[in-house]
Length: 156
Image (cartoon, rainbow, N blue to C red):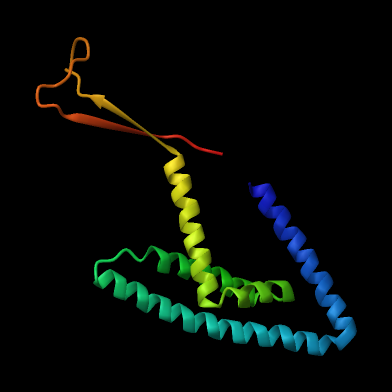
């Protein structure tokens, strides 16, 4: 998993560098630098604004006793977006600005929640047992209590 992530970062970095050099050769280094600077400032401002809005939504949901899972994941996506927009390059900027659109970010947040719920549910094995006395063979209890034994199992 770490090797794949490293490979992805390496490929993305070389792609960004190649694209920056290509664009700089066509429109000049200063213009390319200015574009990178402008997208960083504009992106940072937009991420900050949407981040504050997301924090307000989380506080509102918590105060009304609702679980703000989607808003929390959306906030984490905003953190990643901020990193992408501050990274010099055009591919990271396009991806970052794309997920600044609230409906796309909500869609991504819902998808991530479903993915992790599936990983959690798929990784748990639930078995039901009757309570057994401390010594001797297992016998059902008089009051019919059920013990639920949960074991985590990693799913690939």
